[in-house]
Image (cartoon, rainbow over all chains, first blue to last red; front, side, top):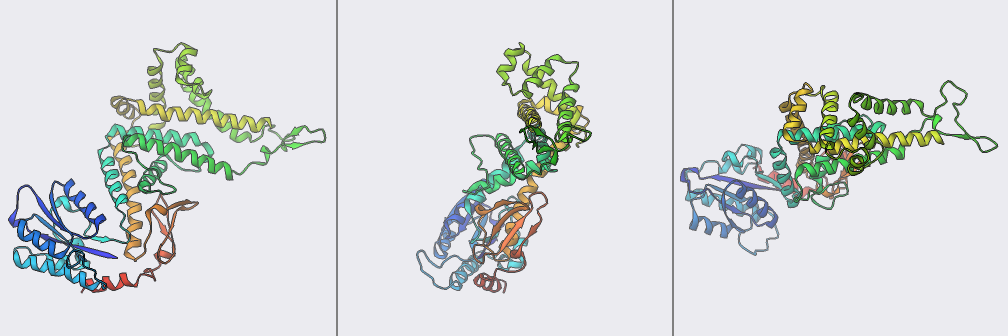
Length: 335
Length: 132
């Protein structure tokens, strides 16, 4: 159910500060548009019907911008069974305003769906949709989207680098369960689920505005990567070498006991062992870093590592050294 | 059995290590993360903007699919997307036709994209009238 909002430019009569008249009878749309206009620095006056809008225009014009709902009803509380009348009413209001203010030129274009995108308007309002699909319109989702998009633009380069590095490590932690996914895929997924999270969606991740956006996204990535891991475990194709066979005495044997490698899933074990060895080898000349890495591999907490290896003072510096060297090892391919 | 336990153990050790790295990187100062990226031979500004672009593109992919469906008169509830094997799935609340899109590429599929919502005559009529 598309609703067209006409833009009437009354720029020759600039008022100060910027002011807007918004004529819209749908409470959700009204809230959304009022918020959008206010965010752009407009003082907004609203009306819920054609008559109210006309009165507001007469009493308070000039306005910098006038937005009229294409389907606004003719008067407050009127019950109109047929859709055409409120539609005509929106058009009529726009025409009346044009008669009062012949300086504006684009009202005809504004009422043409084909040209809705070409209606001249102040640059700061270019992103406000003129054509709104009210059946699919969901205010919380739109408001959430605006906030999320603002948060993305507000991220500093260092925020973005931290997010990217964190995403890369998360995907590396998945091993085979990553199934070819990259850190960028994980970030993209976290962002999508944030946008879907405005309501009670099954897959969405609601952004609680009390935490900053970086923390929200890292939390989402943690949860998504765990989910990928679980899903992979459910469908993971086991190698035949991973299934033990029991003999008559109940002793377990691998089907590959009689071939060259006696280890089950030897290839996978080697890949993981290799990665662990590679990381440790990077720090072979740094015993403190090796201790911290061993602690992490063994699942020790920060406090346990600090007391176990006496690294209370050095811990933060050691972690920085680890990240720096691994970052150099992993990050060279980017950018 | 021992070997399966070994495998699980290796998995978990590596996972723990990468998890800790993922957490620790968030504690790096602005100067440290910028310097490290430069030292790794990458341009921090460029890497950062590429990451921002990824986030923007994810928003755009979702917008595109909503807009496309809306243009065809379908009604989808944004709370009803669910993750399937090939991407996110949803159905038109009016005609029940199916749509999916891939998060990574934004590619859309499904019968809902084949044409206007058959249950949405009123929508089509209004559109026609309005363009006169």
